Length: 358
Image (cartoon, rainbow, N blue to C red; front, side):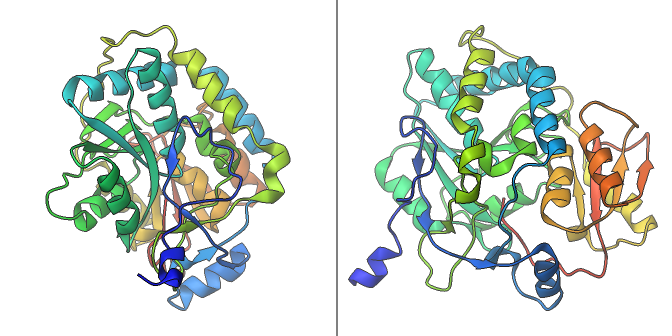
């Protein structure tokens, strides 16, 4: 391998804020094409891949900051129980588990699971890498993890599911012989092999992104190939709460023992089809423009140009921030009591979505 090619396989070296004891980061530093939200939408219309574009994150708004604090206060004990139940299930099911969290939504979850296992006297290896819808898992990073753990059982960790796109991307892009073992805290799509709950809820880190995920940007592709890339959102360093968030999760998981089990509830059966039908009635027929779950809907309002917000009920505490965000940009809100998720956001049907990363 030439020195130039080898450089594209160099893991992340910039000053992220994830504790080294919690995770090995399988990403490389790079600078993507930076665009505004409007420029991004225009490029998507022309067929440019979402996985090659990046809009720099802004300082978290008051709505975001409040949503994070309130979710941590309101849902923190539940999230601690979900983390404990999922970790206990993984340790009871596999003899040589290796956590592979999917950057970014899975990264804090994997860190918290590794910390919890360590408090129980067990070392649970944890790596984080990129998966991009339309491109799949980062094979260079995956090969690195397999090289470090040749006999390990890889468990792919994420925060939540929406339509199940990441589950599909895993199944389509993993090499033969690696099962798509997806483990998540919240699985309203009903697609994860291991789910702490099938309920839709607001996980605190869904509201803040980089400032609770080591300051990493969303992952992206570059023309050179090799490891998928990310950049550090340096403009947010003064707002970073990554360590504080992980410490808070530590406190919430502390009461639980390795034999803890929390029933996940009944597995949903194709809930996204209900949302797709509701979206079609509103003129959105492209399923890529339909983003169900509280977490995915929140991302639409932070990254894209939302066209409509669907809610199961008005004034649910986990969706109040979505109502505030929708009001701020004058996006219509419709209540659907039969919605199988707490929320779903629709992107304007004129926009062409070409696949994007977590």
